[in-house]
Length: 278
Image (cartoon, rainbow, N blue to C red; front, side, top):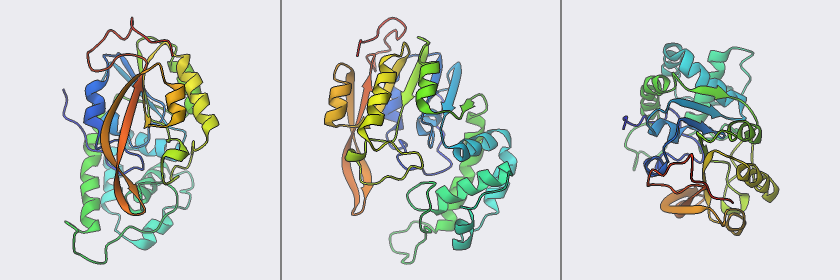
């Protein structure tokens, strides 16, 4: 297996801590597709497939990944020259007037210097008390800069889409040789914060997603937290769990991450032949 690439940005809802577990369970596939790209932790942790496509509805986030792939040296230099600065972080929320390199840099600034790994406006991330901090925030930014080159190389053969997720699922889910890894914004009742710019807090949106996934001929692996709604929607699917932590106002708390799939995972089942009927 190829060495995992560390994400060049923090991202709200990132699967970085459990990406090795997820990757270890993914069935064989020829075309890997993510309808909700976000921070791409799972893609960056897995061995490249014959074909790979990632999608996100957030156009600025897709611009960041595209500029990183196409102009890695330019973006790396721009980020390396960016200071850890309250004024810099505040200015990053303004539109970049059609300059894609600057748009990508500002996305990087928002995610690395803001709080919570979100593109929504937040306070500036900084330390006052040095106790408990292994390095300065400026030093942490250097660490994220150092990850850009490897991430750009990993993205070299990855296709990028900027579509509503259900539209992408309908398009790519028709093909039995596709694997859809679906990591949507979680149901609002299962989490403490709503930090995505394109949210899915309501039950109706998750029912629409379930209907779209039920129509897929592709193999589907879905991430989420346990809930009565998901028990109803995916009661006939295979289910796998692991323990992780989630941030809340009082610090990290233990959570159970769940994967649902319409194929058995972990035994390299022939996904082209074996599907459940949801």
